[in-house]
Length: 136
Image (cartoon, rainbow, N blue to C red; front, top):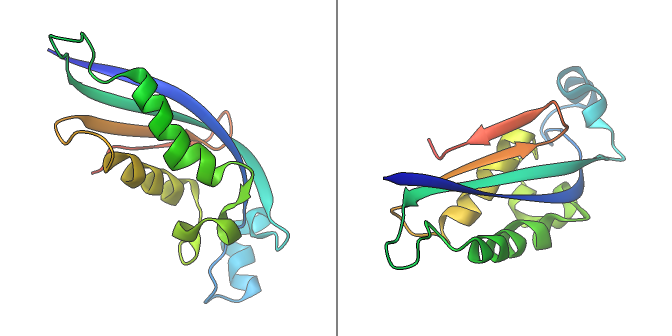
């Protein structure tokens, strides 16, 4: 029997969508207002879901407190109230789109949980725009 546990978290961050190797006009045509040179921000909502077998000794798939601490250390602390383009090393040469952010988060959390557990990350950039990544 496999069960999924999930933990919600959030962080606030600024970013600018653009490619350094494109002209301003190219960036503006593709990214529109998200290409604002002065950046813009989002109140990101995050759902981290871990799926696995229930440990018969503890009754847990994973201790939710451990998952909460991991999310804080790997996502909230380094991303919250930051400019993703300027303050977060993973985005120095990676456009901080929602798609790229969710993959970065997945990779950071994946290395901290047991390999037999499946991981899914859902990231809401706005209440109506969100992305999901399962490591595929």
